[in-house]
Image 1: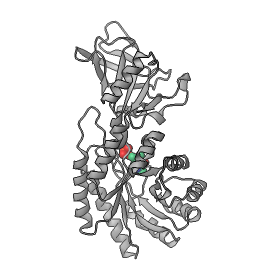
Image 2: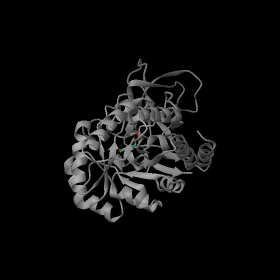
Image 3: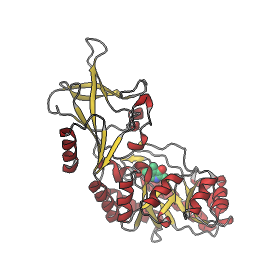
Length: 380
Ligand SMILES: *Cc1c(COP(=O)(O)O)cnc(C)c1O
């Protein structure tokens, strides 16, 4: 936790304003993260994945620092524009777009689109003629704590056909993209994907289409309970893989960090609503917080992301707890299969700090499930 967040939370407590869970994001940490990405991968353009935290304060800061933006919808495009990014610094990176949204993006000046099949290419060709497209290829996401399934991307063997189709329809076949899975703790995950990307470059080259760009996606981790490699080790692993697969004809590259840009910048202060047992001789206590899966902690789904949790009673004896949210849905349980060790002295009313919550929390909160308001958020 940064000194600025600690001071902010102390002031809030002293003013008695701490009645609801709150996410506090320290913009200085976001600035440091951006500078680290820019310095570590100097030949790569940074497209911040807006969905990770679309707060106007975050977008305005990143726009000022020179970042580009990866967006998934017209509202995200409009937010990036409102933050001060020019259209040439914005990509429409969702492979699943309504044709009328592509037309709207085109009218707003967006000229860079993701595709992963011929039908999507045809939409872009009609609604955004002459634009650049990159084809997303599937990735197996091995090593990722939040893998991305087969929903996005095509088999690498199909990508050249998709890009050739784009070329024939008057689009600029610009390159290849992939995402190695979110919270990717293996720095070598990019190697296999880059081998496949290089094969698509060769196949397109044989067909007379010269691709220029590889979009290396996101996946850069935030430190939760386990340690993660530094951005520097990701940078050197990626550079080695580029050299291995592209030789001395290294393409233009972009990265799309989301979690790695904002995850460690945020902390949620929450309150213990209830501590109970299901029978007198249970070893495991149930701890209910005023935030859960519907209040912003959706990434605890399948217990994938395990957040570090600090309590005012740390240091003493701990015991296993099931950790749950406050709503009346039985799915609103965060950690049960693998119980969470918390101090045995933890009490109703205690404030707990959930760390590493700057990404994928605020906009994941339900609008009013059970009447609970969406997660309150402040950027300092
Ligand atoms: C979500 C997303 C990202 C960001 O992923 P992180 O793992 O948070 O870095 C990047 N690119 C695309 C296309 C995405 O959908």
